[in-house]
Image (tube, rainbow, N blue to C red; front, side, top):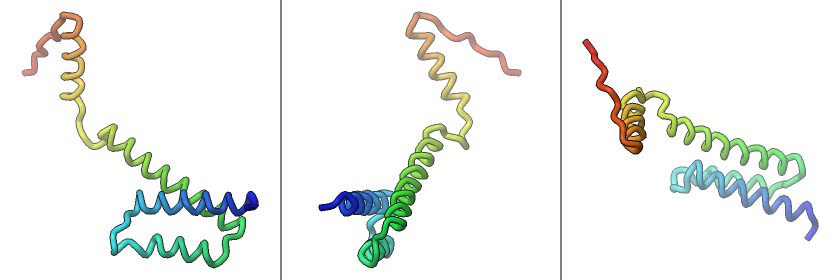
Length: 103
């Protein structure tokens, strides 16, 4: 097999994996994977292979960014969590955090 065919197969496999992982494989979402399969079977020239590679990268990057935002808990006030973490850190060395007076 030539290098271009191997590259196209790898990009095709990576794109299908990304679509199944991030879009889903339920019956009502099957048209996404069907579209990818049809486009690759029609004509997989170097321009479309490059576009598919970029789209795969975009899908994976959006998913990673979304997970990162959820891990940061952007919309949630984290002061209580920070107090708990600081309290555990202080307790690990035998100290206690002072009680803060709030009128």
